[in-house]
Image 1 (cartoon, rainbow, N blue to C red):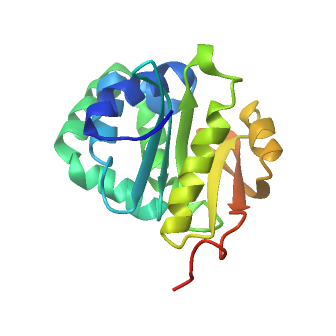
Image 2: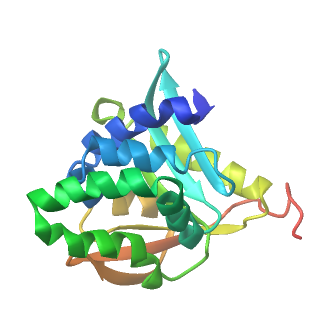
Amino acid sequence: MIINLTSKDTKHIALIHSTALEGDFLPSLGFNFLNTFYSGVILKDGVYGFGFEDKGKVVGFVLGTRDSVDFFSLALKSKLLKLSFFLCLQIIKNPLIVKNVLETFFYTSKDKGPKAELIVIAVKQNYQGKGIGKKLTQALEGEFVKNNIPEYKLTVHADKAAVQFYEHLKYSKISSFNLYDKLWYVYSKKIKGYGKTSKRK
């Protein structure tokens, strides 16, 4: 069942992010960082979050935004002290991550395409392959339509199996860039049916 994410869900989605996307950079900053990050953006204006609930537990989630540049600024402003504290702990352990931290919060300067973005989507491993990811993207697209957003983008590792998932759902590759010394693709998608259920401003 699709649900709207609230502040009480931040620990659940941080845990899902940490495990389902374990090899990515943000999970390497630790659970406390992710939990703080999500608590700083959930329910904020222009941020849209949905979870998939099974037997009362969130097993997958998607987070999108009207403007990706504003999104990361919002996260920093909302929880600056806590985020800085958890970042410092990780930097003490591994000073080399400073470069990756800066790239994370300023990658939008390399990004192309529409402002609206699917920031992150993750599903627990034992729930993958059951169509949950597709249902979550559809929920996000429905919210984009309600807010007069006809098109959005996302970024993904060029070598990830997720590329096949997005291409199967008819996303179009529009550009690429380097992040964390890896190649990333930018995909965009025009929301099917936009204009029939909403009016442009």
